[in-house]
Image (tube, rainbow, N blue to C red; front, side, top):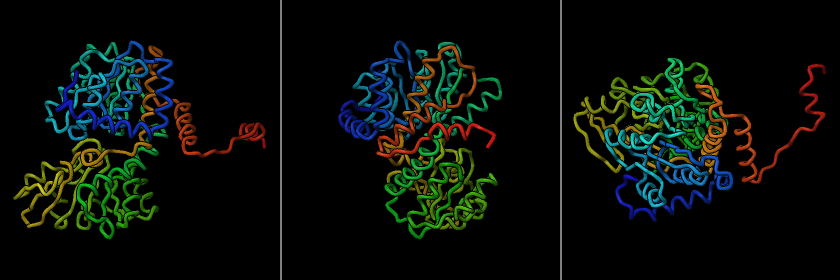
Amino acid sequence: MYDIKNIALAPSGEKKIEWVRRNMPLLNSIEKEFSKNKPFSGLKIALSVHIEAKTAYLCEVLTAGGAEMYATGCNPLSTQDDVAAALAQKGINIFARHGVDAQQYKEHLERTIQNGPNIIIDDGGDLAELMHTSYIEKIKEVIGGCEETTTGIHRLRAMESQGILKYPVIMVNNAKCKHMFDNRYGTGQSVWDGINRTTNLIVAGKTVVVAGYGWCGRGVSMRARGFGAKVVVTEIDPVKALEAAMDGFSVMPMEQAAELGDIFVTVTGCKNVITEKEFVKMKNGAILCNAGHFNVEVDVAGLERIAEEKQEQRTNIMGYRLPNGNWLYVLAEGRLVNLASGDGHPAEIMDMSFAIQALSAEYLAKNRGKLETRLIAVPEDIDNAVAEKKLVTMGISIDTLDQEQLDYLGNWKL
């Protein structure tokens, strides 16, 4: 079963999947192991992640492990129809199309879980929300879940604190081999790929305002500086603000930064980060985009209310003329700019993140019925194994401790 625009697009999607397959050696090795061991034999896996080539390959790896896969997107604009078509042609249950409205998006989520999944792989927590609200009778079949991103972890923590969470969830996002590399280097590169290919404008010499200095904000700021931009960081966390200042960036409130910025990138995971009080202070031609999971960080609805004119400038660029005559430009409707306007993170980065996903899902399958109903850290041995394998694929070797050194570190008497 699938819901796509055109199955004839499948050859194009398959080429994309083949390209990432060649550049994801960790998943290659896991696919071989899964093909032999079949850890998901007899199990259904429901997945809600951006449907592009790297995710498609993850679906194939899980299928190789014996899973009956049901997949959908986690953002209406990030699905690549040719990749969805390629998955459908391979017999994977895929419910995703680019550009669907809110109702169709929810229908795709529902079709992904209506058969009762055993393992849920989420990116943003939409499947978890739906399972706990509309499909509560299916929860008894769930072994556990894996959450890919910061926003999803925030939602799940709220569920856990309120006593609502009904199955164990592994916090894939919090693994060192995920957030330290995916969020920093992956987001840092892919955000600018999305901005640059969409606008075709220079970054050097401009002032870039980055809202949020978590791992994603660090990466976006670092790459902006590499392009030659002057970088301003806005934060609510005093420690992160201090870190940004010591990393050499200007730090100030958004209301003050609004007057200076040429390009604004939000990466906070919160809402209403840039609103009307900032819009009216911005320069003519300022560009606004978001790299947080949901399209709530830039108040696009508020911008539409105050704009006197709205006009599409280029594909994925909407212009809004304010009463003062200034034009502001919003990329990708305020949705994830690196996926709605690009191809997402580099394959080598997602190789690590999806290796963590695949091995965490295997961990759930192996420990069925043994895990507490709570948020669970990725086991350290999985994190370290991924790092060690990644180093090998890069041709890098490192030192190891001998027994005398181990004894020294483990002894409190010097």
